[in-house]
Image (cartoon, rainbow over all chains, first blue to last red; front, top):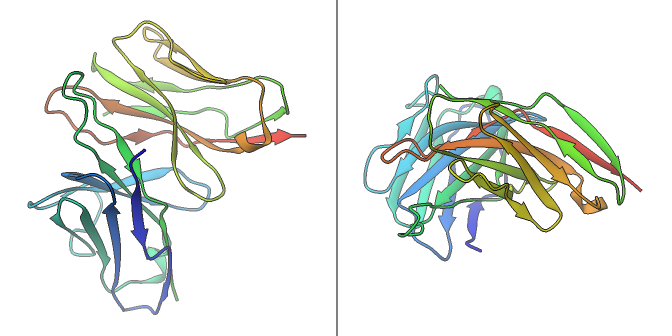
Length: 120
Length: 117
């Protein structure tokens, strides 16, 4: 199956600093990637949809200036948490969509292993 | 907006037994996909099974099968011959299949499955 990586897997930063998380599709090209946030023992909440070469589409309630998303290539999307605060501490997961089956029109989303962000 | 409801926060099963996890959803769309994802302690999301709404036949993947009731908007997951490695959080998810529609996944709150030896 297709592989999606995330880097770093864990990051600890001080309040007020910015943190960048990378999401890479290793063996396929992904025109669309998704960024999720997961609180402990909770479900995944979609933050934004990242499209290569265009602006990301953010879900309602997600601050665009706080969570900057850049999808500069077909294999890389980045999420930057700007001026991080303790309430931004969470588990961030990305998924990447493959080209799909041209006959059925179905495309698969493959998930990265996640990044645990801790803001002190 | 679509919603997915998992009414069982926790379930437990004895090893080698069968367990069924429940999921209901709400949508006004006629064409969509339903999924069950497994999230073990590693937090890596793993696709367990997928069902296309236009297919009447229930999807099956080895020990995992679903009971898809479109009219009732119900999508349960049956795990047969449960193994210790099945212990995880299980999430039910919905995705539109409409041409040009949103491809985002809408997740339920999850069910924590414990497998007892």
